[in-house]
Length: 223
Image (cartoon, rainbow, N blue to C red; front, top):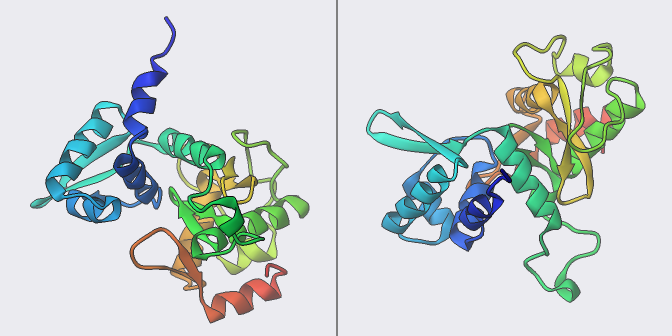
């Protein structure tokens, strides 16, 4: 039998639910009240939307004390959201779009636990050029060829624990090319945050490169 993609598409294809999914792309768990604020709806309405997303297998909920937290059901859901974002038109009309595109979300952001935006693309370019990872098409997976690289050494990445692919090429909707997902992408973002080279901006998944991060990245050839 053919898969029922219409059910999933209908669950995504409502502005409030789409806004919630985009917020959940930061890889964190969020309460219904927080997601209601992002989507611009009442908490009771948000609960109904989240129920629809759970029924479609896009979101899972867990209890944390007295709160119920929601997150994406898995990386395959993040792949779908990122692919749709790459196909989606901009919210501003074309004549009002900056050229080249600018803004915090486009410069650096979290994409379901890994680094995206211009910074994520730049890191991927450097690691591909230096032979750390292969040149993969979006969706393809691979392995880290060597950990002997100045960026990985500076971030303290010498091994990658856990199951799953070490490297996966993830299509970056804002730049039309791939950034790095998989366990390497997760390790890169985690180390950048731990060493305060980047910090999370409040209220979304955009990241801010700190002065120390700009200096360190610049010394490694990443503007």
